[in-house]
Length: 404
Ligand SMILES: Cc1cc2nc3c(=O)[nH]c(=O)nc-3n(C[C@H](O)[C@H](O)[C@H](O)COP(=O)(O)OP(=O)(O)OC[C@H]3O[C@@H](n4cnc5c(N)ncnc54)[C@H](O)[C@@H]3O)c2cc1C
Image 1 (tube, rainbow, N blue to C red):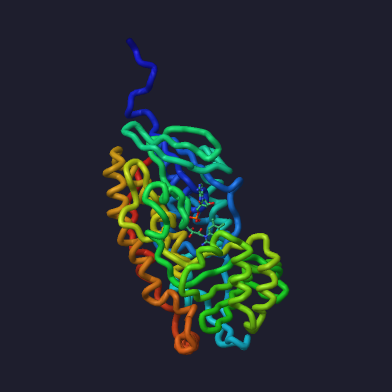
Image 2: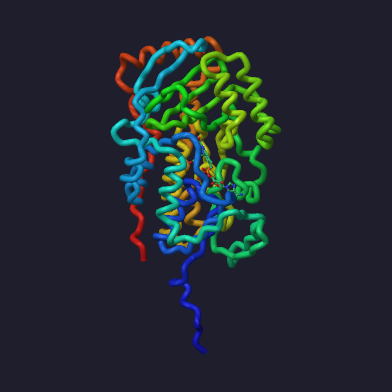
């Protein structure tokens, strides 16, 4: 009797990726290129725009180059000209070039709107990969033959592998390893991000106001008539109730910033009106393992470094490449996931450690720490830019086999 099924070694392995932001589409690109049949499920009804500008640096620049998207990223590069620090009364402390405080490499690194990076990645894969928007994984049931997935919509499908690229609050991680509290390292800050009209005449620049335990920033991307506003504050314990309730978030931010100087009252008013408020805690995800059986995690879901490091998107891009490389190199997913973890762990650890090595110094929580930071900033005006941080480039990328 002749079989109509293709032999095992030419059958495409199927992968479901949960999350279509940065790590999800990047992984989809590399897995498709390596011969996998890829499906991406995204909870939101469409690709999510918005978010503060993000950096792509070091190793991640090389990933972008190999993906062929570096010219687009360079085109979308924000190219801020200055970063101005203000005192609590709104007076100017110093203005420095952005690279002086980011630890980036001015000539090579790029800074783009998060939504632009997500859109560029999505455009790269949308014709080759199946996208399911407005749906999400409900349950996962692993067996020797694959992972049976029940979706919230009621659909059911089976995949060879499932990858959680669903961010810091990953549902895939929760299903696989338990509640986020077990893996979340709270860093003592909460932040609110939203857009507001550029009534200040700001252009190509970031303005940052500080008081002990509080920071407010306005980011003018180009000559845009919209500003990215950012309110960050020290909070000893995470406000778990507010995390699930946008009205409570607005009230908390307004209470913390009551009586603050500069344009902060106008920012708080704008936050009340904003329809794109993004509120979260500054935290990291630290896990002893990134996979279990046929399911693994990538990007923020596995090793979120927090916005304080500015390395979330770079880790996501580099991690996606390394996971795809491991899966393309070894058909045994257990061995591949082990190799991915072995090769990326140190890079992730080094970047997460940036918060313990001064990455939070822009947000001092006491008057004394603020004074020390201000002294450091004044010195930056006469010093050459800080050297690039070794953590940004600490991963050497192996070559990925050409597509079959
Ligand atoms: C709208 C938005 C705004 C952001 N703004 C900033 C910012 O201003 N500054 C900053 O440093 N970082 C921001 N981030 C986080 C930043 O994108 C990540 O740190 C980094 O790029 C790593 O990306 P990631 O793809 O691993 O995770 P994320 O970018 O967090 O993406 C996770 C994706 O998974 C989706 N998702 C979540 N749960 C499910 C589920 N159950 N099923 C299916 N899909 C799910 C989300 O909608 C999202 O598209 C933002 C993320 C988003 C989604």
